[in-house]
Length: 196
Image (cartoon, rainbow, N blue to C red; front, side, top):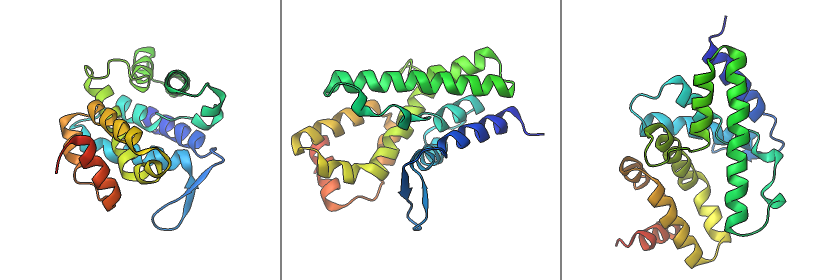
């Protein structure tokens, strides 16, 4: 019989796999976008946290749970609209994950803890929330930064890199500086960080 962790992970992955959007992986295979994102998040976790427990592992895996259901375009343009969309997405993903955990046998306390981590409550003070944020920043820099930076005006992109950097722990900074990047991306990061 599967453990509560395995049961919840299977349920989370099944919801990720429903994403109608797909992405092409490095090996040329295709995968639902959200499932690929979730796997990338999990892959980073052991590098940013020394001893992640099962609740943190589930929270990291579920951070973008069913995000495609409420597109960004349904919210007003601009920073306030973006932050409201992101907050609402975090609450919905946290509530869904907490219910999946309860269904699998986790306590209300454990389920609520996962929801709080997904909602990024305590960022900068809570090491588990910081680990989730570090994973998200590293996944962005490794997989989405180059394409994203080609669509955004240069000075705005510099500010985005600076904001991303401020949210990361020193350990994540060290990991980020080891990522392979194109010359253009590396130059942008160096400019944002004020390094040569």
